[in-house]
Length: 293
Image 1 (cartoon, rainbow, N blue to C red):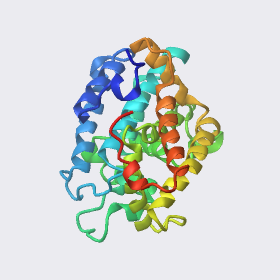
Image 2: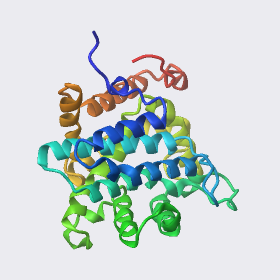
Image 3: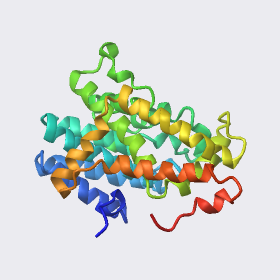
Image 4: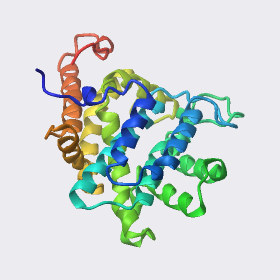
């Protein structure tokens, strides 16, 4: 029998499958009814990305989309589980706010209904600020208190600059401890994605629309992926304190698999990128469309 892989531990065939798994994991540490706000916000996030949230257009970025949001959400609850098993549990309110932040950390890519020029990719540089603005502007519709909005916004901020980790940030110790989990989840979720390579061209088109330097051709996104991998490893260790490794405790406890499945999936993707880079004569676009592995 083949060794378990991240993509088969939980075949995320639909957002509902992921929500059910998150609720199962949450219940190991917290009262079942404490998950209700998360379930409601999960539905609202799906509405936002699928064009059912009043005042906003359907998501039209194919890299930063609902699938990535759901993947990040799942990674967060897995890291929370591993953290709680190892270090002692966050309180339920902290866990709920962290999961809520995961659901809306990329809401800044969504255009308002009057904004019909281009796609949400044009907001790549300012998407974190826009995500926080979305939370503030829609607090009532999301059912968030003023304190919820403040904390969730700081968590969202940590996906880009990690300022919440500083002692002088004004955040509580619980917030500073929890914030790295979202930042780490955002990074490992995208780079471990089973279709990460297939989605790289989508990322190129997003960067091109946002006029990000260094992405003049499709091949540039392949070339820069290995550089991004080095940056990600540095951020995971230095900015976020290696908290992504708590997933190993989660997989060991819940699935009897004592391995870093996220790390293995990421390295598998990077090995494939290296293979593409080492074979410049072949059609790299065709190689991005894998069917196995």
